[in-house]
Length: 273
Image (cartoon, rainbow, N blue to C red; front, top):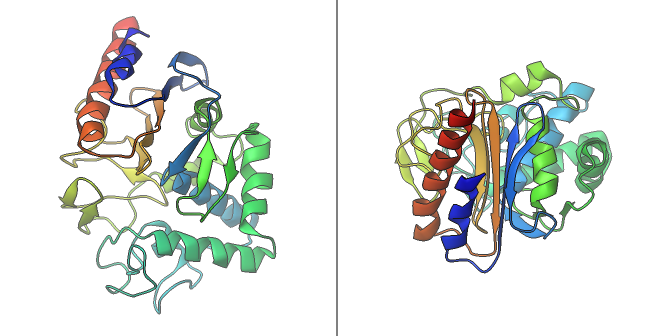
């Protein structure tokens, strides 16, 4: 894919990108697909998927109490528990505001581990990583942001998010639909969004502006980006996913470069059909 050559001009030392079709076919790659990169908050997609598996298996339920008073598993997954970003402090009532929270995801993982009676890292590995063949992926820090992976492994995960076989399709559909619709909040790096739509661990594009995906990404696009210079999005309307990993932290360069890449990828795929 010629569009992927755009990463050659990115102000990074190393980068890897991949585009994945709905059936799992790799449409294009650029960069070392087996180089391991810190994922930062893209880790949340893996941790959320592990939690969704736990819900399917009955270890936890969406409406189980977890986190601050009045909060549930659903609130934690949707960044609506009221917990602060990085401190164990309550900043609002559950369901009232979208407060993006690493603490909330870590509390979710701890709750899962306690109720399933298995360390979260083991649950993630046995339930998700091993079945998908993601052998180069590991959780080396907190469940909110401590993952390390490769473009090749995330391509396998992106295929799962388009044609699930580990998750039930209905579970994925629920997870990528807006939870607590209409609530506002700050999207890190892109300012206040009204509303700041989110699913169960998956950020949903909808009408957010500005945004890290492209202008031509459909409102149904879901995924996540990471402070370490990483992103993964799935556009179910276009029928493709895109993964990008770099070794430079997110900043103005990424906010400018990532949407251009996304738009170029979508245009090239559309032209080829």
